[in-house]
Length: 313
Image (tube, rainbow, N blue to C red; front, top):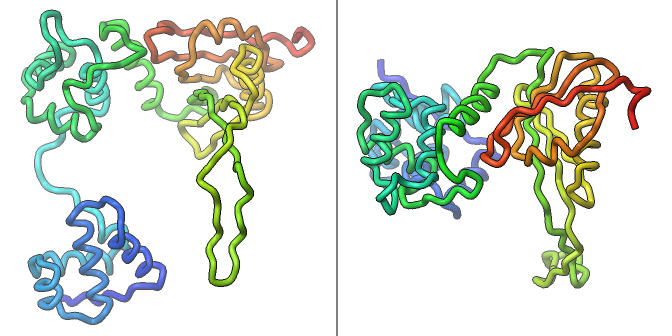
């Protein structure tokens, strides 16, 4: 029996599809699926849709079926295609990206696909790796072999690979309530303000604002992100100093993780000397914060213990 699928879009779905077709950079197949759904919602037959969109009848049928049986997102996205599993794991892809960003071998001006394939064979357990596999994985990550600058990694070596795998294993480990994993980072931000006050919107007229902006100084953002639950915290400070870093760490375990735990694991890109200068105490019990650094400038773990509250400065 030939099953027929009827597409009935809601107003929100129609607006989303029209916005998708009106602008932006999207894959051609995704745009064609959007056209198919809008035409089907308008009552066009499968033959008319296939002729106007320029696709086969089977494509029209599959798109309508995936919308009816699933939702709009499923109808617009690609289905998993049959074939062999990806040869490189997520950790190996991260290693490939790091290798492509490191200095090329001695005597070479830049990395080539064959050189990267050979380096991956040496760094992993693969007996062989085609340059096409390397090309595809680099393209997915927006990299090209001649992009070799990696400012924080002077040279890719065994020590860096070990640190990188340590951080990746930390993210991939099963959640442990007694050892929460928190990703920590910080970044300076330039504040800007309006040079002239915007003119509010009025009937028949959009809000108007001037293109000129005024600098209002800078602030520093400290960002905390729990890897295993939907929680994050952003703290704004006027500067990036050891005292501000210490205050952030104190809030981490005094406010955000007050339940006694053995340790809090923090994956960070901050400089280790900034952590070690932060002479802070964070909880009443004898817990600790263990930092895992991923950059070459901070090449080791630092474990900072905790003093009783009455001994805090």
